[in-house]
Length: 124
Image (cartoon, rainbow, N blue to C red):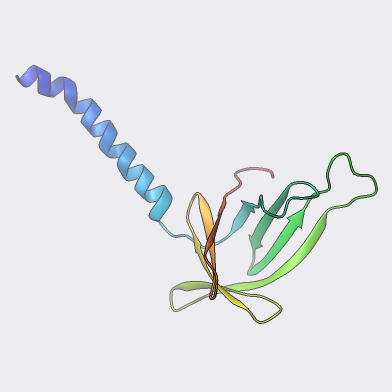
């Protein structure tokens, strides 16, 4: 009986570690710095949100088949932490709540359903 338990112990420990790691990846909130993939606006080519030094932007790359296109940068506004909550202030005056983890960022407009965008690791 003890040999059966000792054979199962590494699997139980591995499963517990995987569960803990998954929880950290999805639940641990971090500052919203980085690049996050945007599929919904990528009509001309790849696009991503970039959050850097308190400024947020939408970067759109041209389609590789388009001629005369260039990289576009659209200012989304500025972001800051207030009372432990990250907020994005758009140039139009709209305020959005930001929640970032190691895997994604969630942008929650005050009057709409929140959307999640996957983090880009490395170059976009």
